[in-house]
Length: 359
Image (tube, rainbow, N blue to C red; front, side, top):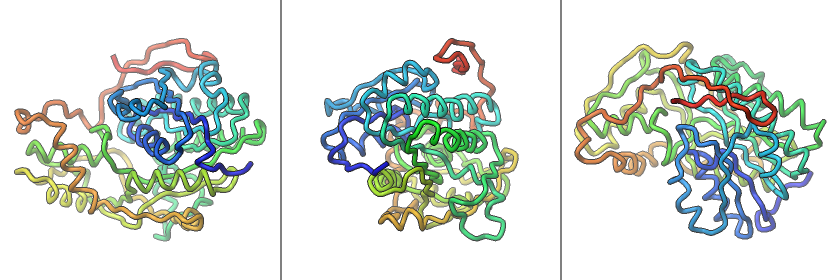
């Protein structure tokens, strides 16, 4: 199947469009696809926020359907006449995955399977699936060389495993349904609107209220980042120039250890701060290998932003979310590893799914 011309796209479906990644994708596609209308499908778990779509709704070109991506009948209806699907829905927090691994399997793996089936039913020309660099695990980069898209998937946590499972389901279904699904494997995406459970917003908000930043172990774990603007540019590049059913790594050019990230945050926050606090981390919280992004760069993409340059603006944005009267308190900052949630059985689509919302 051919790639798409952004000017000719008429209908786009974004799953998880009220979340961190999804809402930014909606904004970006509204700007770069001037003739398109966007349907957002979101089940509004804890990480979604209707306010993320305020600007998008004002365009008059965005509609919202609340519902679970695991509901086959609903998803099939939402995909009617769609030219492009961007699948950003799912669970994404590695720490939370250790508490509720079944939630990640259901949302990330089986949810993707249902979406692919609906896409096949509707003959949608193209889907972009947002996976994660977590599918590689730490073992893929044993010799320190950048990891390419053909490296084996060796996830070492439930989140990475659920994302790898989703990719295997895609690989097993694309031929059966005759669909074109292109996969993005990004590293840590940075930007506004991210839930405070994630590393960077958590550090920024804790620093803003004068609390020490919790650093797991010795803080030597290496991480790569990519800015939201660069990630959205990568998505558009793959839509317009990518190969059929291809996979692309998405990463910036810099690697930082967590302790360095903490120091950069402390430098960026213009408030009295309290340094770092070394704590026991999650299992297998080790360095991630650098990614080889030559396949994406061959399409004309390049990373233009950096964590260091983004931090001052992000510090201002996340700091502004905290009322001045609470800046010396720890209110509204959730635990990094939340307690196990309650599972509630609820009919959805094929009946395979359970709603796993917090109560």
